[in-house]
Image (cartoon, rainbow, N blue to C red; front, top):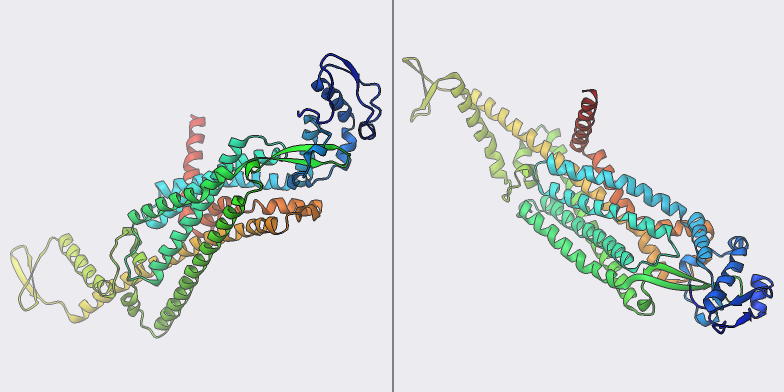
Length: 501
């Protein structure tokens, strides 16, 4: 507790607490309080008297303490409230203002931690190696770390006006910025990858090696962008006057550190982050608009071809490398390659049939086939109709496979687009609140209790993205749902079997 500013007593004299009109009106009659000792002893008596007034203070205390501005002249504060009073004020703020934010953060923690663990495990152990798999694993790792760091956010909420832990505050804020920035840069890489695969299919596609390098670069850029938070954030001391004259509240909040409250560096840092988010959002919007236009055009073209009975032309125009994404080949699937697939497949099938029958075929110069069975030799020439039917059959199978994989590519793109959209939308309220804070610093004080509660929730809506991404995966990916069900069944069945033995 801080020493009294305007009350001093000789260390060895018996003194009477001065009959100050301010103290008398605030604490009641103090003439009966005899003090022996130094100023700290005097403080203990004043604290006792203030604690007696605690019920009255709780009923009249203003709830603007969470955004209180430092008092221009702290020397006007005769005394500061004791810890017990400060604890009561903190509890009042949590109960009446921050409780919805606390419940919201706990819910995001409970949903996000196990959800992202499942996503990471399924895509790591049960998925084929593709760039999409690597990107989703990276997002799940970032989201998982972000959800784990919500424990710090819960601690900060519970100690809204008495969080005097600078190191923990610095780490929590920097870590949150780091994970969100990493997700943002990774989503940008995903959008560019989707754009290249769908809108520029003849260009070299991103391989697994390229994807790993891109994620690593995204993390490095995120560290650079988040590092200033470790310097600027910390314990901010705020002194707020109460409704009682000359008695103030001294609070400690996890915000911009005291040394930077009057500096322009926090504004520069915030402006840099907002400008970066806006730029990335514009790039994401551009990429996915182009993807949507391309998908719609292809859908109309394919529908027109099918309506005219030209199904076979689809395979000759399929040029998406992502159709063959399971191989992660850097080469593009050109029309010539796809047109030849049917004939190659036909040859392979015929060869397999010949081996299965135990017969040998030799092709003569004139194109006929000599078939040997036992000791006899029979010359035969396959009919043109038979070859055409086999060719059409294999090309139809190739077309169906290509269309199936293309549909899967579009579905994956839709899933990643919704993840990106959720990320963008969840940050809009936070960005708006940050802008309002700088444009109108006293805006919070004009709000009602309900308005203050909504204000605090909007500051934390960015948590939605980290917690709800697994929900998007489960709704849009049937394979992910099936693999998740298998994991849970195998886990619980093993436990049940172990208990029954």
